[in-house]
Length: 460
Length: 177
Image 1: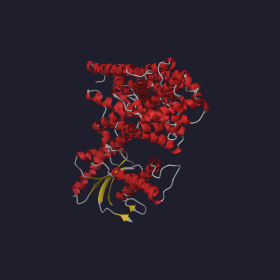
Image 2: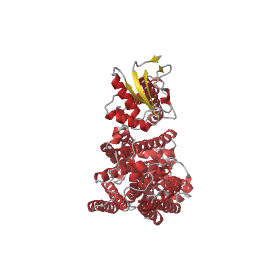
Image 3: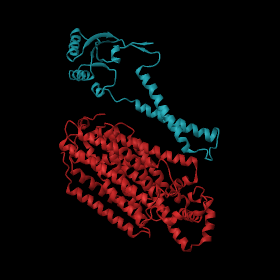
């Protein structure tokens, strides 16, 4: 069976998931604070996660093309379908962009004009972290990625119809892949700084972009494995054998270790240097997100590492599916941990900023901050710079209170609640619906790709 | 040191690995007992044809690696908490993140050296060991398929000779190794 049929039952399942997601998002929105912090952070979290999968697919597809890789050719339509999801990612991130421009969410501290005016660090970064650059980078780069994904898809489909011995379509595909790889490599880093890292606007880490991309790519492989196993059970892709799954298993294993390497490098350098502006990132996560912090490392490193270290577990569907599900959930939590603390911090700061302006109890705040500043050596904003002094002290009060009194932290921030999971299921339904719909639009295996024979006989 | 296996074998030399694979396949279907196969490089798909079990070298590698992990971590723990406590950069004596890179390095070192030594020992290789070689050209461009003669009758030996010839062997020799 080379033509995929999108069954009615699958359609209704995915639509059901989407409806559940919408209900969860509405519930989040209604029960939220004035800034709708929880709703918007969930929206950003899942948009970045699924757009990342689409980007990862396009990147791996291009890299394989240029490296004369042929093992994946029989199922490369799955990756093409993933990569086309960039158009949905563009729309989703477009909503976030509209929010930055229109000011109807407060995810980013740097998007708040008053805060930037009062803060030397934010002012210094405002050349890169400002609504204009955010808009141009998001729309421009994701737009270009989608354009290339769509070009490569069109050429690949043309090859199905008119492919011949001259392999002209394959050469064109390589041309676009060669354009995409450097462009995608650099632009994804810039976009990750904008989308994710700038949520903690005072903080930066030079290897954050690789760390984030590794997360995206390994999730992409895990999704690929699950979809292939599912499609095989439906009678498609009978030629995708243990050998192909073995290679995907190796990638999941290898990239999980790569991710851990980056996780640890980032952690250890910051821990060892012990510079306050940097340490605050891990201080927050270790103190207020402790279970999640270690769970993240445990399920994204130890489980893939220990389960997939053997040859035979990489060749058995059961263990591969188990690890894939773990990796998919684990890297969702990883993004949760990257996004939520920064958003919460910003919300606290802005909320406090507002009450402060109206005339908050200043003397009490000052007293409180003197008491806490001895414990909070690592606090980014306790660095004395005159312009942001009052601002920084305000933050200390908030962070101290949230530490000692957990009632202040809104639901859905310290650990994913049911609404977060429901939102994720909704986005997952959208993603799968889109991918399955794209799978119907072309043959599952490209018959005229020059590497298709190699892929049939793939043997490790 | 010269290792002798005290065997007499008949072997055919092939020019191409695909010829060799076909010959091994044929020998299997005729239930001939293959003594060994010699090749300048590993041939894809040969191991299952010869019925070789998966190597257990990597299990050894895992154990050596674990040994390295424990040596490094345990060693540093002992040194920095009991033997000679020192403070680096205001960190506690037992600062786990700082131990991880060295632990990783020793894991890799122990696993790799352990596996090399094990491999050389099992294969009877090493400095000063002088093994008899079936045919020097099998380290260059020839592929050999060998049968143990043992106490086979002359008829059977002729049968093996004609099998080798039919399967495409360019030269056929009998040799004591």
